Image 1 (cartoon, rainbow, N blue to C red):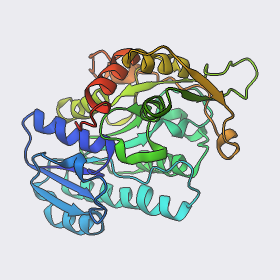
Image 2: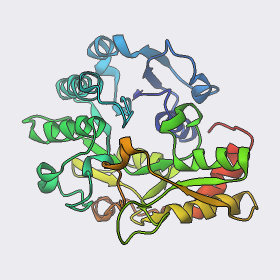
Image 3: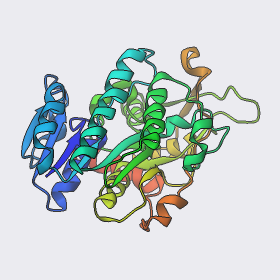
Length: 321
């Protein structure tokens, strides 16, 4: 039996679909099912049992002996929120309790960390665990993710197999519900569809032109393939980057959107909001050698092909994966 937390969400719902495609039907999904806005994300998928987040830990204690693996992708992900108590409860303490149960019951664990833990990138983007204590996350969400990474590495006992995955900038189907926290691809498509214009943030840093800010954009189908790689591979336990290893500019992304829609580019640059300007990352690029050394050899979808697939096969007709 496989457990997927945060199953109503973007990445986790795609993972459930991918697990179904691989032949897995014995899946237990966990989330806040009192909220039905995200119900289409799991519609039509083969699921054994639905467990509400509030009762999951008790359920897991009782049923862990039947569970082979937990994909822990549930978290509070609002990068603009400063409510440390909520992040501690949902992202740190909930994860710690889950870890302890996995240890006691011998259940393998794959959990979502975040590239946001790298902060401003002054220490680079290498998933060398010796470098983690030096990282300085720039918001409460990233701090909670970083705190759990450090806590996990300090534990004297661990699940038999475990991996913390630092997801970089993920985009793709099933993020319709995320509103302002959705990817730039989703927002960009909406803007172009409604106005014919794409707005990107200006640069407020000397030497970096407008639209030249760069991110490691990774398609969600690649992310879930990496997740399932850890189901079968005998990898060293630890924390791994999940990106493409190739930073691309927001201008590249904008041009890919217009190309996917068969339109001429029409881009306007607007000031970065002051409430995020001081914590805005101008460059991220995952170092991917650790995952390669662990045995993952598939190529990653380039930005142009990922955006084209997302736009033409999902966004245009509001199709779910």
